[in-house]
Image 1 (tube, rainbow, N blue to C red):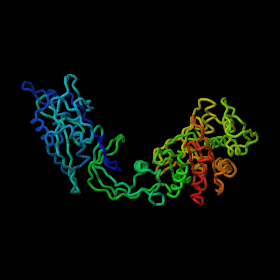
Image 2: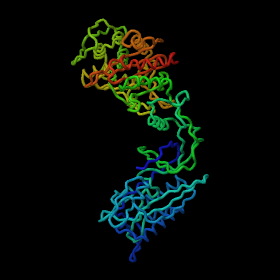
Image 3: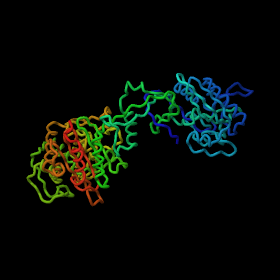
Image 4: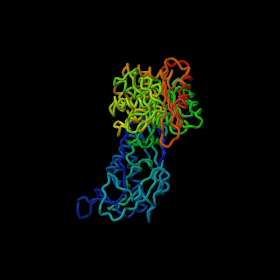
Length: 590
């Protein structure tokens, strides 16, 4: 495979060059015999051209192409239609002001392979191999003859190409290759393939002169300082820049910084753009600003380092904008589990279950009993002993009573209510475009049984989340509106179907505040005031002896979520990580 530099491309129309196929026998109209004026099909024959024929066919084709006589050049190939399209595209889209093409004599398959970055084709018996090899499948522009008994042999020829461009004294020099075959009228013809234009060109790729831009001079945080953080790996930042170019609206002032280059692109986007030649150098790139805050990022990295070798991740979001302020992973150079991981979120899911219950008319002070075991067929216990029949919903939230949320959920909610609420209010499942690859949270829309439905309400079973999703849920509660997380200001943000009602948001904030002050989160939230809120979570994993630790919290204009694999209860590992970020900020963010 060729390795081309991946660059930012803003404008430049590209016309797809038709793919050339193999050269089994196929018919062209041309020539006449002495007994009739009617044209007969002109076909490729199995016999290779002589050395003189190959040289003459190469010379005549290159001369016609260089002179701009596309019709003549195309007629000297075995596929005039495809050649006309491709040569016209080269002329109109690459736009050379002058083109010099000089025959270089016979070439070897190894030389062609070196030019393309592809393995050398097997050499056919008795002759040098044309390109592509004779066994290739004919392309859409070829009309293979079913009467062909053998694939034709061809002669691989080389040539030197020089393209010049207006406005610059730079010249583009490259080595070209073409295969010459013998036709039924005993004349040579260039076997047409996209690689005749340039050895890197293949399939439906396009070649054109396009705007190019220099890479950013540096990546900076939201305050313009050079970005720092072990989890912000070069690979992730490169991916972020590439995605931002695609997702951000065009910058009307950016053209002044553009250069130009000859570029091969894949319309499907599956391969990187291949910059073949720079015509005009772009101006030095401007800094690439992201939404990360270096102070919070440093705290997030330290929180992950302090896990002592356990795997985990953490995300901090600005609720008013959805901008990601920090994210870190342990290990830092492993999977970006903060965005792309998928794990059962445990009791942090009770924020969403509470939302559905509050919307169904259950209030924080409504009595919702907390029995020792749930009412579904496979009864689920709490992780604390005893029954509390007089608990309110808020008290159940504060102590994270599994049985209360399961029983009330089964009574008050339809099977699909939780998934619909998550999507319509919190944007879970809307395929976020954050700037980096991320895994969308998953909640079964149609639970297969009462037991599965019960597990959904407490963040177990088939429910899967990551800290990005849970931090966004907490941010939505804090601000009262879903703002899709983004890593670059100005990226498009998905809109939720509806906003959480002010009444429900107020009640949720009060429930999370009560949990931070005197519930399961009070131990790690001690000393963090200013109406902060939190929710703990621990998720059981099949085959693991220790639960995964989850914790989420908000204070001021900051929402955070963390998970630690095998970390135990929420307050054991994820809680201290989240609290450390809040404390690193000092005064509440505005």
